[in-house]
Image (tube, rainbow, N blue to C red):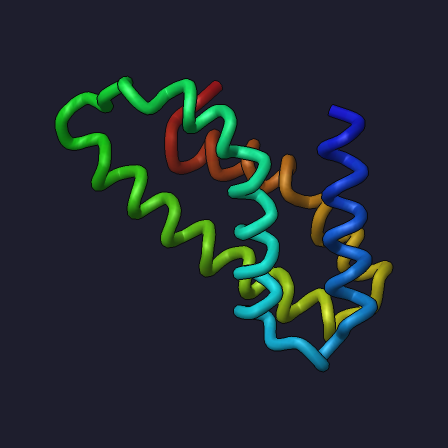
Length: 107
C-alpha cells in the first residue's frame, strides 16, 4: 500500500512538473507502460486461467473508460491549481457514495 501511494504521488508529480510539454495521452501511455511492467509477474502466473464467457467485453469496456479517465485527469492536472486537484481527488469517495445510493439503490 505504501509503495502504491508513493507511486501515485510520483506519477502525479511528474505529470504536474511536465505540464503542457507532454500531451496527456502520451503521459497516460507511459503510465500504463510502467504499470504493465509491474503486472507482468501476476499475468504470467494467471496465463492458464480463463474468464467466464462474456466477461471479456465488460473488461474491455471498463479498460476503455479507464484510459479516457486517466487522459482527462492528466490533462486537467497540468492546467488546474494543486489545491483544486486535491479537492477534486478527495471528492471521489463522496461521489461513489452518492452515485451508489441514488443509481444503484445501495443503503
